[in-house]
Amino acid sequence: MMVDAETLQADLRALVGAEHVRPATAADAIDGVPAQVVVEPGDAAEVAAVLRLARDAGLSVAPRGGGSKLGWGNPPRRVDLILSTRRLDRVVEHAWADMTATVQAGCTVAQLQRVLAEHGQRLALDPLWPATATIGGILATNDSGALRARFGTLRDLVLGVTIALPDGTLARSGGKVVKNVAGYDLPKLMTGALGTLGVITEATFRLYPLPSHVSCVRLSASEVSALHPVLLRVLDSTLAPSGVQLHARQGAAPALDLRFEGIAAALDAQLEQLARLAPGIASQPLAPEAWPTAEPLWDDADLALICKASVLPAQLDALVQTIRRVSAPLRLSWELLAQAAGVGWLRLAATNEQALLAALSILRAEVGRLHGSLAALHAPSAVKARLDVWGADESALPLMRRVKEQFDPQRVLNPGRFVGGI
Image (cartoon, rainbow, N blue to C red; front, side):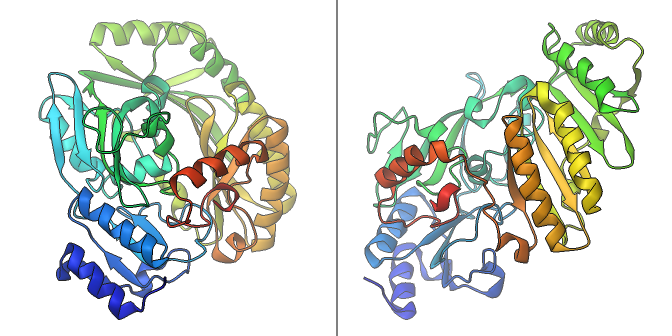
């Protein structure tokens, strides 16, 4: 049952208060798809009530946190409501003695880290744009960063979640259960689902101490082929770097950056062991604050593709050679920041959209032969309209569609944005 805009806004105002409902503007559009209304619930119960209303009215809902990654995914088929988590911005509990924290979905990563730092602790990940990225957003997009080399991904750090389901009920993993959905590992299922199964309202994480000392080192060579064996030896050694990044780009020498954390004596021992694993390779200290992040890849990105690239660590050298071979005849500039276990960011820039489309098509086929994948997270709108950003693995689609059918049979949440049009 569809409702007119005036009735919809009146119903939403009754649920969350008049000051938390407004007509959407052009700035609220997602990938050029306009929305009707923006609603900002104040707690999990209001989130659930909004979803129930949307389901009963036959409306689609796009959850939104800080909006820093709202362009990831395919364009939505339609957006009736934008459900903002802006008001869900509290750190609910910091159980510092147990090294856990429970936080609402709209709290930014930076704000959470500030609270945790008061007791010398942290959420051990470094996602993109932490000042604006929210907890719900990084869970929905599974954005972890370079620290995954030591501490794992978000799926390893999240202990529990509370989610509002499209039918208007609340589900929680572990602890107090409002609605039990036994059989699913909700935290892992929600992480990376792009808000297509439920709206995360709260999450609980395991924490780690802030490091007392940090040492970073940069290894340099003229070719990736000289650095790649060192990377593999490090991964196969007793060294425990908290960050490992291979940085390669067109027209510049590659670098292998490693980050170590701990007490000073242990760091010295690790750096000595690293030197033994990299004979003949130039090295220099790297200030921790100079550790390269992926954000600059998005600078001047009007005619650029930015992809999440995944290959086995053993295939990183082959990936770089493939990128170089494909980019040259198409006159593309490129840059790769590969983090930890072969997951990284690839930027391709061109002077025309056709070259980007051709490059992505060829690279996906080549990366597939390396048993990897390329998902296009950013693309010019004209390019995005002509591709599936996910480049989906067809073998996983039937299972993913069955899960979607269980959680959201009426396709309320983010219709069309996820893999295979889910």
